[in-house]
Length: 119
Image (cartoon, rainbow, N blue to C red):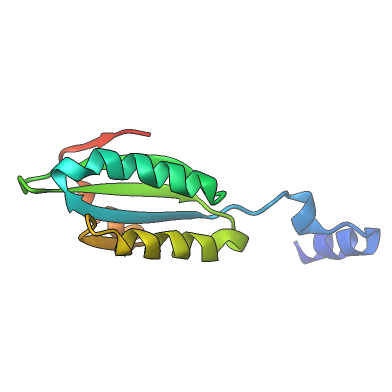
């Protein structure tokens, strides 16, 4: 692989530019009252889209708790927009209807069981 990279460099080709814009995937889980989840999901999709973030998937889980629901949001986020994603997460945390916001692969751990997909 190093030999190929050397060949590309000498040819004047930027390997990373040739591969296109690198994309990352982030996942966050938002917990809120069950009756607020629909409006919150819609607002998340609108706000993230306006910020240039691509919401790839939203899974809503009403689980065993009769009062709370959670939404696991998968976002296609290039590295240069990571700051914007963090800003959106802070805005979500400040929303009075939101109880918790969690990041990462562990965020989906509680999504087993009664999850349904909506996007």
